Image (cartoon, rainbow, N blue to C red; front, side, top):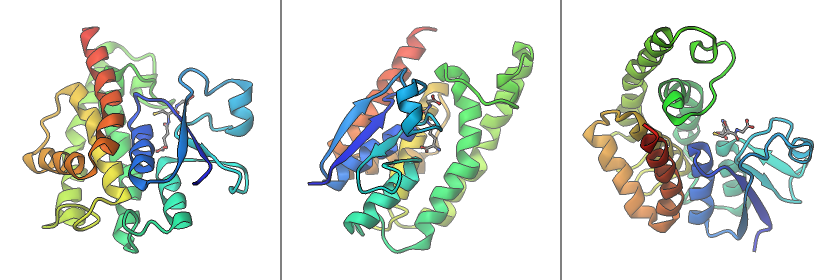
Length: 225
Ligand SMILES: N[C@@H](CCC(=O)N[C@@H](CS)C(=O)NCC(=O)O)C(=O)O
């Protein structure tokens, strides 16, 4: 049994990706909720980036690893999980495209509604007035459709998943990410709704349990009005 400690913040889809992966992998792990603790001296000593998800295992050169996709790649490679991480460069491309292009739009579109902080240099982080912030947020919402459709037209094509017949780590990362769009009632195209449903059906509780934490948080922030 692998000796893996997974540090998480449960409302986050970055974390949901690693949480779904570890449940689907069959690897032994423990989960540690570090909500509100990522900037403590103890956490910063291990992870100066103060990020979750973050794994700790004695087998890593620095003892820890963060970045959801890197965590899934490392553990898949280390434990020979070719079912979840097939030798297909499209898996890596899809994940880099998600993190580098799609997610920044999604964060700008959803983080205000999620009550998550935005990043220095963005309109949402600045002292601009509310209408200006909303205009910038709306521009990000509008920018989502094109990269989202690239996942359908280029990465998934006529197969069920980016991984082909079975969900891969790129599928886990994409499906988890799409969960956040519910907070702004984003009109997901039907292929994307079917895709997330197929992911949940295929992975079962490994998907549903972490997804429920994200869905529960979205329900909570929406109840605040
Ligand atoms: N690209 C990273 C993003 C990780 C990230 O932004 N984590 C946030 C939660 S969504 C976090 O841990 N923030 C805590 C902090 O900055 O103190 C990944 O995919 O793992």
